[in-house]
Length: 102
Length: 224
Image (cartoon, rainbow over all chains, first blue to last red; front, side, top):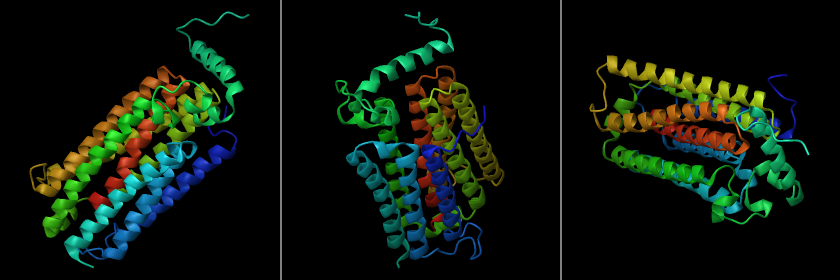
């Protein structure tokens, strides 16, 4: 029996979700300057932090809908979970702005 | 009518799953894909939680964990506002590449957990177990990288008591790593007792662990 089953629709969507999440992680690594082109302690700036947390929010949304299968659940649960992640992302950006300014 | 197989054999679980799916065919195809109880027309036992896939108790745990990590991140944010320079300098000693690599490792493990869940819907037990094994292997790789990171910090004399950044760092990543270990135990357990609901529940737990790391990585390693 093959390890990878026939690429029926749900399996294809899982692979696409994985590819998107991996791509967004690479964007996070670049936006967060994980390769340290600007120095170890140089502040990222608000724009980079917003991109970083935006990518995180989108990754979490993909995971919730496709991996955790909330796509088949009620809209209230979907919105509730995504809103909870949004609140965390918003709090991090807000704390960054308060700590460093724009 | 054919007699059911022995309760201790793997065939018994397959027999029971087929029996249940035969009964559910009359209640619509949506129940097959989501596994939710509400759609099947059964009496609701968990109220709104019935529309979530897997065991409702696992969702109670997932919501609780999100609240705990949400509070820890609130504490982190407050401390970051008070001491931004200390946090930047402390964060600079972390390996951002290892953190990023660990994120990719967990995302990939999440893919295989989701594939295991998909395979279990088609009662492909052997394939499901294979996917669960691959998921666990990526989980072990995550822990190995985390252990390397912790030992690297210990060699530099950095511990949970070094400063407020490292207290929160070790608290959050340590608590998360404990969940990964617990998740590995659950994956092992459902590989043996592989009913449809067990696999769905274990995979939900694993994705929750994955979800928390997706938030922890940018906050602890990158935002500065």
